[in-house]
Image (cartoon, rainbow, N blue to C red; front, side, top):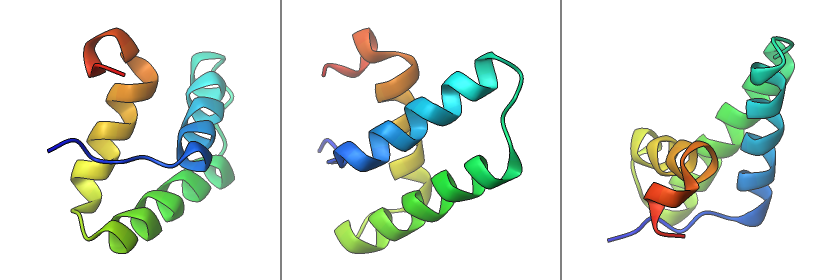
Length: 67
C-alpha cells in the first residue's frame, strides 16, 4: 500500500533537499520537516519511518517512486 503524502509535506522536503544539495541545510529546516513527517504519520496512522522513506523516495527519486 502506497503512503499518501500531502503537498505541504512534499514542498517542505523539496526545500530541505535543495538546501542540502547547496550545503546550506539548517537545523530549523530539518526540524520543520521532521515535525511535519511525525504529524503526518500520526494523522494517517503510519510509521514515521515509513512516511519519511516514502517522502524521500518521492522527492529524491521520483522516477522510481511511481508518482
